[in-house]
Image 1 (cartoon, helix red, strand yellow):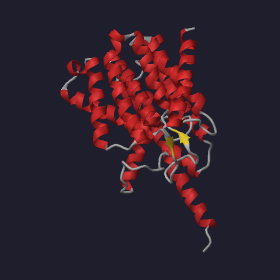
Image 2: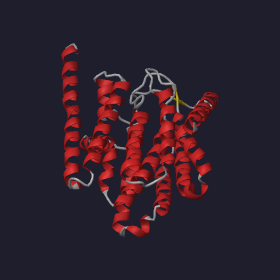
Image 3: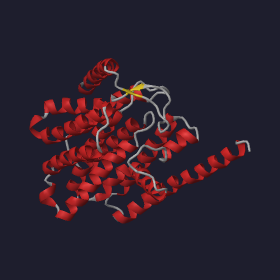
Image 4: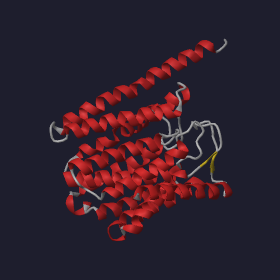
Length: 325
């Protein structure tokens, strides 16, 4: 009953946000780098912040640093959705917010300084990777639901590391967002406020799980996004492109834009592949050396990603054949 009520409340909040977004003209206009072709309301992912707010209201004593951090990144991201901000300002807020959860988790006292530096790089990188991957209908909602489901299973069956409701609130928010976004014609997009807020939530949970279990294996719960994001950055660097500018070179973009697969199908593929990876990680946790698990996951994902270059070549050849001389 608790989560049904939460679902209804978040649904009402989302509908009210649509009226606000429509009134203030908070929209996403397609351009040559977009994966969509119609004007759509932006910032629907703010529902993740409201879910965090509702949880915080019931757990003030244990949740205030996390909530402060997610509020800061949500605020700066929502501002960026309305009016573009400088990278320095956004990164500064991300750094401050991550510092809050590091302090909350006692990271500064539990690992050496070089480990803290690596943790900052990974956290900021993962937040931005999550944001980069938010480009087609359903991908953020489905992927988030998959990751949160995996974390909930671990929390319930393997290692209790957080309040189960803390994970379930994010899952309910994902379902509400998917109701409006996982459509042929999306009612709204997550915007930076959505993708970055939920990325912050996911990173907090995974980091907490890593610290409790003393194992980095849980980073593989973000393996699909991670491989796509890192490999695409390397590809763009090879092409001598500005990696901070919008582009259409992620595998999911090639599949949906150039190859013509439906957005919802591509999003489902990403979620299902991550579900398989998460199942593999859970199944072999503490049974196989972590290095072997990482290699067993990353190599197949790299192979899948390499299909992008085959598709690009195929599309290029097809274009050349139909172009008149």
